[in-house]
Every structure is written in C-alpha cells, then in structure tokens.
Length: 214
Length: 214
DNA sequence: CGTGCATGTTACTTGCGGTAACACCAGTCT
DNA sequence: AGACTGGTGTTACCGCAAGTAACATGCACG
Image (cartoon, rainbow over all chains, first blue to last red; front, side, top):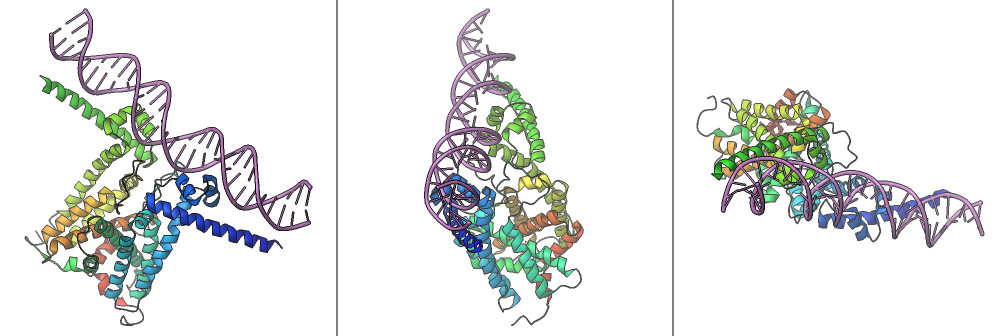
C-alpha cells in the first residue's frame, strides 16, 4: 500500500520541516529578520536549495516561522481574554499578557512585526496599504470577535467591534513598542494607563487653562 | 570673498538635492519602498554615485524623503489638533485629517510606515524593539505634548500623557491600516467609532449574556 | 535489476547596495 | 597664461544575498 509509505515520508518530511524551522528560529533570533538563507541553512547543517524545496522562498519560511510564534502568543491572549473575571480585569490581564510577552522576548516580537520583509523583487503591484504585520491583523480580528460576542453594542455592533478590535490592538502595539524602547515606567503602570484610556479618562479629564469652547 | 561663493555653491547643491528628492519621490510612489537606487538615479537623469554623494546611503535618501512627507503631515495634524473647538470635535478632526491623508495617498503612507528598511547589511546589533516608523514616534510625542499641556491629569500626568499619545496614535494607525485594506465603512463612520472608543463606550457598554462576575 | 522519488550537493545567474578611479568644467591664486 | 581646487558626472567594478539549474546519492517497489 502506498498510503503507509506516503505517511512515512510525510512524517519524515514534517519532522525535517520542524527541525529546519527550529534552526531558522535560532538564527533569526540571533541575527534579526535580515538573516540570510545561507546562514539559516548552515545552522541547520544543510544547504540552501533544501530550504527552498521546503518553503518555496524566503517569504514562505518566514511566514511558517511567524505562524508558530503568532499561534503561541494568540493562545496566551485568548486565555487572558476568556478568563472569568470583570471586564476591566480581563482587559488589564490581556494587556499585561501581551506586554509581558514582548518584554520577555523582544527579538521574537521584532521579527513578528515586520510587515512583509520589504517585498521581494517579485513585487506585487503595490496596491494599497497592507503595512500591518499579520500578527496585528489576527489579533485585531480575534479581539473584535470577543468584543462582539461579549458586549451588547446595539445596531451596527459588529462593525463597531471590528473597528475597536483593530484600534485597541494598535494602541497596545504602539504603546508597547514605545515602552520597550524607553522603559519610562513599570509594566503595571503602563497597563493601568492604557486601561484608563480605554475607560474614558481622556474624555472625563478636565481642561487645563482656557475653556474648551474657545 | 569665499562666503558668497560658498553660498552660491550651497544654493546650487540644495536645488540639486531637491530635484533629486523629487525624482526619488516619483519613483518611490510608483514602485514602492523597494525602489532601487538605479531606478531613482535613472529617473533623475543621472547615475548612482551622485545619489550617494548627496545622501550617503539608501537610508539617508529615504530618511530625507520621509522627513518631507512627515513634516507635511504633522503640520496638517497640528492644525486640526490646535483648532479652537470642543475636545471631541478636535479629536474627530484630527482622526479625520490623518485618515484623509492616508486615503488620498496610500503609497506615501506605506512608504512612511516601513520600520527601518529591513536593516542594511551594516546591522546594528538588534538590541530592542524599535520597530515603529519614525512617523509614528513623532506623532505620538506630538500628541502627548498637546494632551499634557491641554488637559489636567493630576499627578503623574506627564507620563500618562505620553502613554496616551503613543497609544492613541497606534490605535489610529492600526485602525486606519485595516480600514484602508478592507474599506468596511465610510471614513466618517470610522472616525466616529474611534472617537466613541476613546470616549469610554467600551467601558459603558452592557454585557451580552452571562453576568460579568462569572 | 532497473525505475521512481525524495534528499542532498556544487556551481551558477541575476540584481542590488556601495565604491574606486577617472574625466570634465568652473573659478582662484601666483 | 598655467597650476590648483572643488563640485559634477561617468564607467567599471566588488561583495553579497536570493533564487535556480544540473548533477549525485540512498532507498523503496515492481
């Protein structure tokens, strides 16, 4: 039977693929996203064409690599998001989970956040924005779904939830990126400040000098 | 005297520099951020080494190019931010200004948002995050300053303002990027949804099914 | 045993960033 | 006038990374 054979081969191929991904992981975490295919192949103890046979091109390899980390991070976030607690607590837990992750492994974070690796010479027409990293999009969609199924937002709620999902993720990302670079405060303070923002403190704050209406 | 002479030369050099930047602008807007130095030189009617004499390396050229657009956009945003109107109106005007800009010229937007061009072979150690585009950082700082000088946030207000500045900018950016790709609603609706988020509607919304406390 | 077929290699092409070396054309100093 | 200086421009090259033949090898199946 050739099914068993195919299964064996497939298993072996999958194992090989995992090994290659782990080698790539080590190199990317050491050298950054601009690690060369040669370097990755060398780390894996093989040569370039094998990488290309497994992953098509550099983008394919990086996509596979990103998927692993993205899935892992999304799992943690889902856990924080689905916890049985007050809304504010859940929000803070989710923010903290994300920030703890990027704090613990900034290199992984940086790798995940590169848009599309500059767009290979292949060049696909340059149609619209599409700058955001896949991770951001996925987090945004995930959060949107949670918001929509948990909150009662009235008519147009679905669309509102999606806007908010992507918006909140962007807020978290940008604030986290800035925080990681400057470290102006503790993680807990950052979480609290962001939650305060989402809780409307911006709207509630008093004006400082002149009245708001000119 | 050599001052007049130097002035003449400097003027001529500056004019040349502007011409080169405009040529680079055309190419980058046509081919995207991966436009080659050869292509830019050709568009300007000259050859590569001249570009390198003027801008040092590709990063230098791109930085100069980005500065022009960034300054222009920041000017528009400042105008919306400083308008004599209610806070909510100012916020909406600022959001709308940004979104209108990226809607009108998505290629400029995409160019401005690339982190650091992938990091040249020079490789600078890969220390921390630093993923964000300079534009995002500058917008964040700018907004933080406006928030801090306009709002009374009590003790720790300065730090809070900075967190919020970067957070809000990130929210705007991510939501705008997603919106630009999917166009799920009109610009006005998007602006309204984001402003609602900042105005605490997330905290105020009712739960949908089970109670919040488990 | 030969026939597939996956795995591995070396050696190459193409294209880009960046540079060295040389050529031209103004004014300036003696 | 003629050497000196400094900016503008060129051609031709280096190094390096992505990606691709084309060839070699081990292993199952008929």
